Length: 340
Ligand code: PHE
Image (cartoon, rainbow, N blue to C red; front, side, top):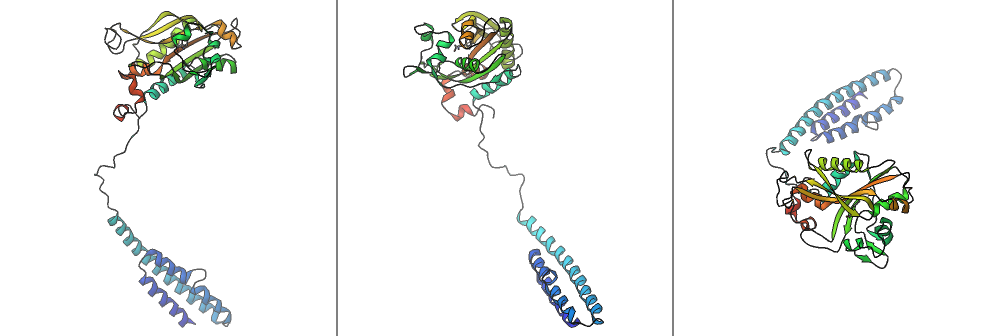
């Protein structure tokens, strides 16, 4: 019996020695020392031995196992060291080489201004609402106090989609949808594309606007002025001044257009501000009581302020772009100049 043990041990040592990889070595270990390996097999023959022979047999088997474990550990260490060295030699890397050029994307200037404005107004408690691009005549005009044949309809040069639908000419219909669906106090920003029959260097048939609406008890022109002045300072710099000029919109009363001081020339007068020192930004006012009533809000209890402006125009001022058609041309030389 002990001859048999010695034979297996010699065989195993030979195989361990011949192993070329740590994986191969491990397989040999399983072959001899594993659960169904040679030693487990030989242990089964113990039952045929006399009770005197058994302890000696067991001792011999254990000694052989210890020898093999020991041989395994040494061989494994050698093979692993060899394998690591080979790996290090083959995966040599020159860290000084430049990496592959990444084709990086940038954000569109319209998105940049839109996101920034949303961030600024959200700090005052405003949250975003969206609306459809094709509107019923009612939402684009009637509910905003612009009845049929009202001259203000012509101001807007509308694209009609059939008899009763239009491509929205402004984002103000988002005000109406929101007032119909939500109860005051309401504080929302409605951004999106709008459409007008118009096309030249400073007008495109599709452009983007942001609408803001705040309905609460005791909303006044002071709130309107404070909100717009804050937004302008945040967008164009802390020394930006804001100016309001009396104006007319059918859906606000009183109404005002708002301007910011020209950031290009510090109000000395330049081409961007038409040498006036001021740049026109958008329209604003207190929501007309009739508009509140049409949307189911009692004007005796609630007042609202609203303002709206073009995002392209804001981008032109912020980034000094001089032709708004560039915004839709997808020219990488233009787009790559904006941050990602
Ligand atoms: N909707 C108006 C426009 O497109 C702007 C505006 C919005 C005016 C809100 C007053 C209040 O010109």
